Image (cartoon, rainbow, N blue to C red; front, side, top):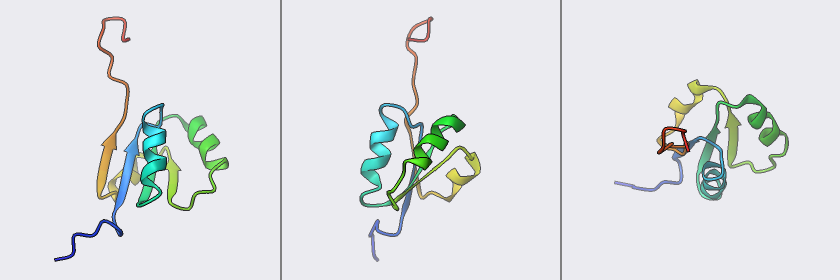
Length: 82
């Protein structure tokens, strides 16, 4: 059985200071979907993107096409959400 990851797709949900560099790193080796709920951020990233290995989206329906999903969103630890 072939366990190659070459034909797999990974989705990084959350394109902040952790998610964006992670998505860009994965895109060097795998087809990558970068998802974020911020449509402005997606528009900006898509406009500056010349990397064929990554597609940016704010459509949650596209997450389901990934073989692997990595969630990189803030996790507040205090009452003030810091």
